[in-house]
Image 1 (cartoon, rainbow over the protein chains, first blue to last red):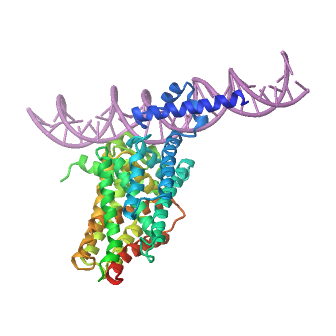
Image 2 (image 1 turned 90 degrees about the horizontal axis):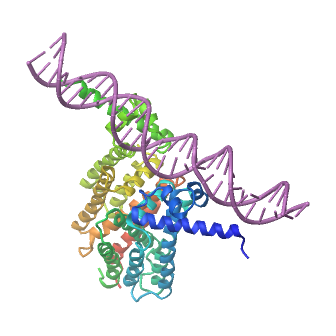
Length: 210
Length: 210
DNA sequence: CGTTAAACTTGAACCTGTTCAATATTTTTT
DNA sequence: AAAAAATATTGAACAGGTTCAAGTTTAACG
């Protein structure tokens, strides 16, 4: 049987995370004070800091839950990709986008991104960056599999193209969360146009001789 | 003749900016306190806030100087681009990169980017975003001119390709300043590989019939 | 010049994330 | 089950960005 202390610890940590998620979504990350979280979680301010090293650490824990989910869905999609590279890429990336506001508000994403950029060497920043790299690897893996099946010319540098595409989808996501008025539909449309432009290249290489 | 008050104002603002630039570079943005800036600029803390609404505002003022310079250089390059789209893009973007540490340290860039993301609606955030858009427009303009001269197939969506490329170069710059160990050389090499992958597409469309 | 109004400066006070010495609780030992 | 050790909790104190009421300096006017 687990000790009393162990159970209390797990329970407190859960309460702090639940209180934070609730408050961050309803009042905004910035506006929420550690004191508010402590009150709802029924612990003291000091205790919050026993479980999470900074306020940003709590936020990144929530981001990690979100990203782990889309990574898992991405694995499934990679295992049985839709027919056609254009459609497969769209499906994968749109899923990233469409899932993004399940746990986090745009304001929370902004705060999380700002944190990871400003302090890349903190545990927070490192974790955020690792999650990003795993997403990038999925996009590259999808392109590589398309090349293996002959959908993309063998001479193409799919790692570089995947890098290019991932950087762009990531930056578009930054702009999406930076603009409260921008809809998911508009974001997907922008992606779609870029995918068209990229794949136009492959198809034109295959279909339009000089 | 300018009034005494007007002269004193301009002088104080200049002193605050000079003190800030010096301190940010030597001690790091984070580490510098408004009190330190006030002391060197020979004003009080409250006066600093009369001239710049926040600490971040001072930083963005420095960023703006930096970006205006590379924008001006970009205009010159657009007027007489090097031969070959691949080389012209490389020249333009490398200039952005190579110029970037003239006034700002990596740590200052990180702080500025974090600011612009976290608070996109503040005057700071808006200004930063506008500077970004002007850089994006230069990349797109260069591609459009290449298309006008027949270097890029007329069917290609150069605005979308420029969008894609700019997003990526911007994200690579974020990663560059997020990693103190990364050199400009490594950054340019990464760019170069992406440009190869992108232009491979155009050249393969022109040279490698199906 | 003296007086009044306008503009500017100042630093003490405020706010909130974070730390840490004192206290309390749980576990282990005897 | 008492004592000792280990582990957690707590809230007051600290730090630095920001605000603002009071004071000071400059300009405008008679």
